[in-house]
Image 1 (cartoon, helix red, strand yellow):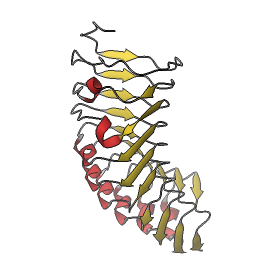
Image 2 (image 1 turned 120 degrees about the vertical axis):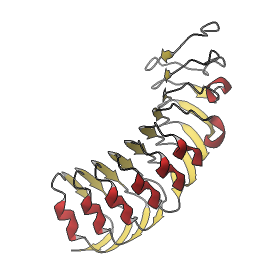
Image 3 (image 1 turned 135 degrees about the vertical axis):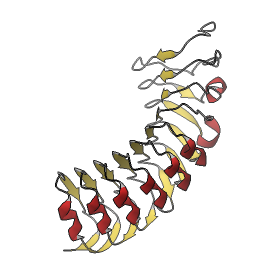
Image 4 (image 1 turned 180 degrees about the vertical axis):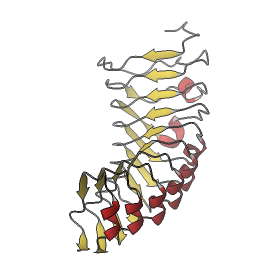
Amino acid sequence: MVHLNHLESLSLSGNNLTGHLPDNLCLGGLLKNLTVNDNRITGHVPKSLRNCTSLQRLRLDRNRFIGNMSEEFGFYPNLRYIDLSYNNFYGELSSNWGAYRNLTTLKISNNGISGEIPPELGGASQLYRLDLSSNLLTGSIPRSLGNLTFLLELLLNDNKLGGSVPSEIGKLKELSSLDLAANNLTGQIPGQVGQCTKIFDLNLSSNLFTGYIPSQLGAMRDLQTLDLSSNMCKW
């Protein structure tokens, strides 16, 4: 692959590949799509890929990559889709993620990401899917996520998030799936969740919610699965 300077798309998913990614990926500066998910690739993200500003779609999920999130990735102004799930990335999320104006999918689940969700993430206004589940995230859910009005999926379950659920969640009118389970969220479940009338899967289980279950949830006519178990709620 040394001389593939005109390469725009490389798909190697599901091949049981091992070892590291080549250091010379994107040396031609034209690579738009890199899909290497479902392998056993190890090591860090190559430096040439960190500086690959042409990238639009990146799938590294279900491998064994390592490295600090704030150091492994550059800025990709044309990025639309990125999935880094099921790896060994750690460190904190950069505020730069909020500057991706074309990004529709951001998945970084099942890693070791820590720190707080940067409020700047609310600036990624085209997001359809945001999955940060199964990490070590702390702090509260930023109110700015209410600006992501195109969101279909918001998955923040299995972290260490605390505080109350912001009422701005009610602005996410297109949501079909909301999963905040297995955190340390407190207070009452906000009635504004009931304004997300397109949700069919709502999971708020295994938190520290108290108070009455809001009657506004009755307005969610498309709701198929509701899990409020392992809280301290009242009828």
